[in-house]
Length: 268
Image (cartoon, rainbow, N blue to C red; front, top):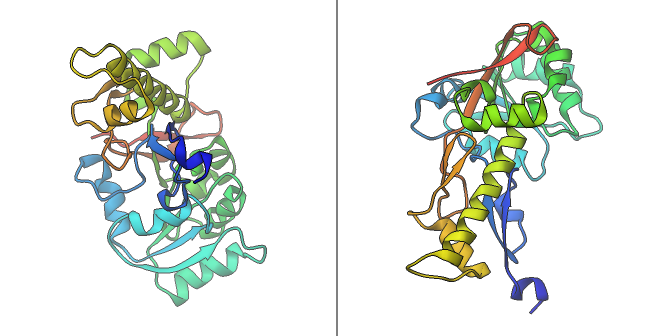
């Protein structure tokens, strides 16, 4: 048995990775919500309305985007295009989507390495089909390059500062960083708070003290565990996924980003 298998670690991540591709020598917990949009909360209603339509999925056959298409919920994926393919053509793909396959929605499951190609899709589309994007599409570059062609796109992110203006984390982070923070900072904070809380519970708990790796893992998946995070309570499902809704944002015209367009949260 390898050393990795013997000495299992508890890892709290801010990024979502395909569970099936993770190493078996660690327990994985995600400080952000799952990309699944099948939940019953009101915030995901907009995404479900898009998802139930026939759609074309643009992504990369890699860790993240491979999970987004089947988990986005409802509807039918009529075709998929690999953004990482060296021969990928945005013009030909969108033309095929709109004319040959009758799609109603383009799902952009890009990562940072394929964002440029995803933005080519946005520009070629020219708002003909509705757009739905994963969290790596949430980037100033999308606003700067996409401009009017990206207006109205709905993007799923774990957290948005404008949806939590009353949170103590927002005011404290602004004082510390002298500016706004994004979802990566917020979920890193949540992951850290969760690990500290679980360790403290097992180290100082009056009922069951077990500050070992196994003890911390058991604390995190306990239905009684919670930690105070950037957007409220941090809890995990037995799978290790964050027990929290996805935050949806929409690209609208605005002046906050300096590009002429902003990501604005779709509130409950």
